[in-house]
Amino acid sequence: MRMGKKVGLVCLVAAVIGVGTIFVENKNSKENVYASSKSFETDLDFKNVDKEIVENSLWLYPDSELLNNSDEIVLLVNGKDNTGFGAWSWSYAAQLPKDGFVPATITLPSRNTTDLQYSGKFVAAAVWLLKDKYPDHKVSIVAHSMGNLATAWALHYRPTFMSKNVETYVALGAPFQGLPVIPDFIPLVPAIRQATRGSDFLARINSSAFPNGINYLSVISKNDELTTSDDVKSLATLPEGTEGETIIPQEFYNKPDSVISHVGEMADNGIYELAKAFLNDGSTQNVDLNAANEKYYPALEIEGLELTEKYGTKPAHAGDAPIESAEPKDSLDTVQ
Image 1 (tube, rainbow, N blue to C red):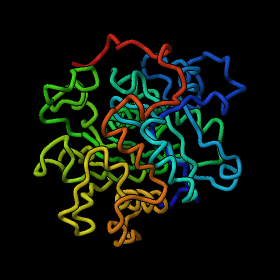
Image 2: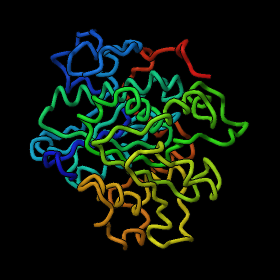
Image 3: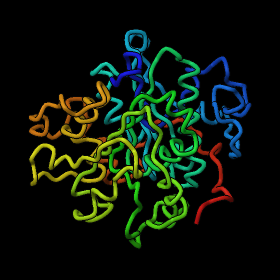
């Protein structure tokens, strides 16, 4: 851990199955999540976030013994066309408990296809709720794909709050600098328009560095289908001035022939070991360089990986909380 932080880590990785049980006492509350002085930035003019919807979108690993013995919570944030539980139940949420972390997921509105300005509020609100419920735990975030743009919104527009309450942020396959080309088969939903290179949304997110006080690591495969191998490192580069590092795992492990897909970034053992080491001490210096010799980490559920690669939001997401009817419509303030 970096100096100035208490020992311990709460990893916040954005994703989602409904979790009404961890916030039972507040179940009937509908006040704005940021109505509390704990937000530190209540003067900013943002659309309200319904606390009950966020609570019902948040899931925490149901192991009281692990929660009591660990002060490390990891919030997992899902990408486009996915839910928290659908993206992470077969991957990091299965492995992190074996390594002493308590995983949590947050399902973003409309499976992270709607306005990223709204989805970003869910990320910030999830951190707020976790810290409000578990003030002695630290929170870190692991996000994949478009989940990183929702997280970027929270870092850019809630910098004081996020810096105070987030320990570490690991970005997997993040399009921070914008998608260069949008294939014809991808619908131009609001989030995709905002993720396109040159959008106003990305211009604002990249107009200043992410806040200090957080450990930052961006990891992207050279085979990531979001762009070309020549452009891949630029795509995932953190906003200028951010004190962090961007790593291509094939270069880090000296495995140039290793093929890791965009979805595969959540399953690859070498990438997981990078994330785990960084969550532990904010550094990649202690990573086992033999980690890339194993394709998958032990707890990975291959069926979940295959379903996610093949079907996206369908079979892989069976069992999610039925919150779709409570999700918002596309907002009127979408950045074109």
